[in-house]
Amino acid sequence: MERIHHLDSVFVQGLSLFFTNFFRHHIRVIEQPITRPSDEAHIALLTGFQYLVSISEVDDDNIFKICLDYWHLLTRDLYSIDQTQAQSHGMNVLALTRR
Image 1 (cartoon, helix red, strand yellow):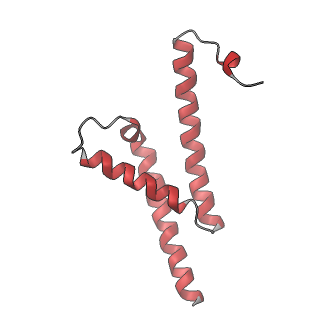
Image 2 (image 1 turned 30 degrees about the vertical axis):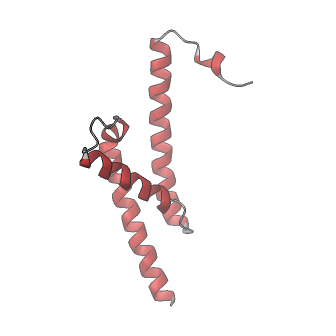
């Protein structure tokens, strides 16, 4: 029983490494809106993204750290984009934050 659990953990860890590395190189595609309902490549990427969300919930410290590293990268990227857009529109970003 312990061996099966270990093999499952190794598989999910490998899957999390695959998804996080893949998404690091293809995040711009995920951020684009779906232009056609038949855009299968984009839909497949979003499905993979949903798998990564589920993998993040696995009760394993190593898998969690792999996913957390990716979520940190993603949120940092999104925050940077948001800051750039706000500055280009002349908005004071600090004035928009909650007090």
